[in-house]
Image (tube, rainbow, N blue to C red; front, side, top):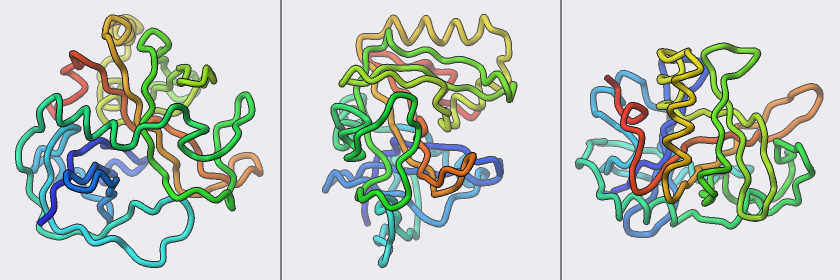
Amino acid sequence: MGEIIITDLTRFENPNIVCIAGTDVKSGACIRPMPYLRTTECVRLNILPGAILKGEFVPQKGLIGPHQEDARYSGLKVGGPSSSKEFRQALEAGLHESVAAGFEIKLQVGQKHVPVGHSVQRSIITIKVDPKSIKIIEDGYKPGKVKVHFSDGSGHEFRFLSITDLGFHRYAQTHRAQSDLARVNAFIKNQREAYLRIGLSRAYDIRGISGYWIQVNGIYTFPEFFSELRSYK
């Protein structure tokens, strides 16, 4: 039986399912259990970022494109929370200096996708950023959803990237006042370190552009974390 430490817990438009991914404790490889889990099952098992998830994980064969982390699973059960040190190690197993380095591409200013056909063997990476560069904002077109601005290790600035982190989504749904987002932003800026899990969507078209779209799967701070983001209560 394998063990992964959950690093990604992301939402879909369909609220009945969630996507999880984590770092294999032994190999350091990123694993995305497939098919997607039911939200009710995640709540029942209390699967949250930092949780140790045990089960049989078998890499899927014949995968095409960047989503090489997909693995079939069986016998899932939670083995409790990881320590702060273990969680940091799980995040750093996929660490890259920048988004461009992680996805092996030269990104233009404002580019938010990796083109279909671009050769890259991963769809999830970790980057470490200056906490003061992070700003969470409400989506101006879709109230109750949130986006993020940040600068990565190369100095590349990203603006209005979608946050698919389930914890942030749930918080935004129930804390609509600007003062609530200001509280989150102030907390993040007061932390010493921040790690972002950056993911690529499955391929789809936006305004005639076919791509894997860059999204923020998780925002994690050290030494402390914003506890209201990491609970089903």
